[in-house]
Image (cartoon, rainbow, N blue to C red; front, side, top):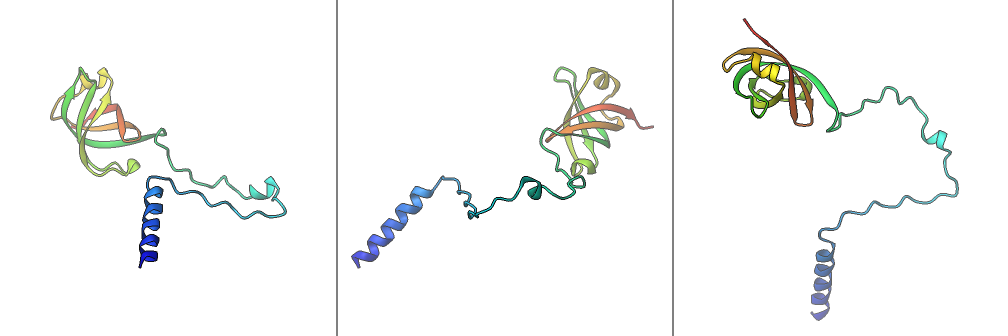
Length: 131
């Protein structure tokens, strides 16, 4: 009975000690020969699609309604439809915008707009009122 308690206590101590540690990457098995660098990197990588990083800018177009303009903060809030290039659903959000854009629009305007997206933030770079 004491042996079982000791085993359980040691197991719990080991688990507690492992909490918060990152998993270690297993070391690859060693071989007697290393592959030449040209062999390891062969193939056509020109067709490989690269996922956009958080700092990659995406150009997109949207359609929506101006719901707010904050000239002091330099933002325009748009209730917009889906933006497929960003994989965004329809939503209402504030975007950075240059003074020329905030001056050209007013609350309630139905607009088409160009936006540059970086991560989850965006900046309206052009805006056109719909008739």
